[in-house]
Length: 356
Image (cartoon, rainbow, N blue to C red):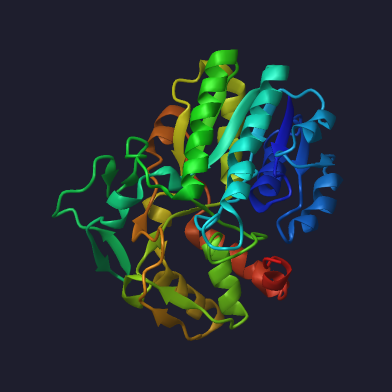
């Protein structure tokens, strides 16, 4: 099996590549990366040591894909993955669309050419913001939980947000590019007869992640705490009760292998893939863990709300469990300790992976 991973030198792409080879050493992996993400160069040597062929190219440029050669599957891990992208003044909205949608179309054209299967790493941010932002919640043990004494939106329970939850706009420009990529990928597969899978992931986390406050919040928070960098609870009364679940990208490997082996025979092609309620933690709870691991550190508060903030986002991955017998194997404590060890060993990591 010949697999191309787009964005292979990012955290998700590189971690998945290593995990896939551990799971099945017979997979032939090549990768494409434009190295636009600070820190991505650090993954080159270890990936090459595993026999992975790397191409320096940009999926926004169709001609850059010509050097890839024939493939059986394409895994799209390449994206500007910030919910603030295109509106924060750091990146343009046009660049966001080019990265996350035009790049996906170019990869789909490659799949069409080689009749290769396509797997898109999508995001929980495709779900509609208004019902999530107005979700009735109560604070319990330092974290928001849905208030089930009041009506909850369709597709949302204490187990999390299911695939049936609304994807109506607004979902942020980032979410819109990923939702559009999902739709066009599924239609490419239908029109040209190749298998397509969409895996909607929540917060990915683990050692080696390029932590930033707008993405990779678990890694950013733990590294910042370890280095005694400034930290702030934004919005929601400045108490840090907002909640996300987390997933180690290596846990995706068994599912990806199963999807590639199943091909067109799969029953459901759009799935939530997350750590679920068991892995859900608030910023305050992460702070409590960090204080125990590293010692005390002050966190300031800014109650001012920010665009696209939501109080609680946990993905319900029960469909993946039911249809694919998939579940995450690493606990949130495992993941946070892995990040903490990496913080101990690489004190300059935040500077290495900081935006230019």
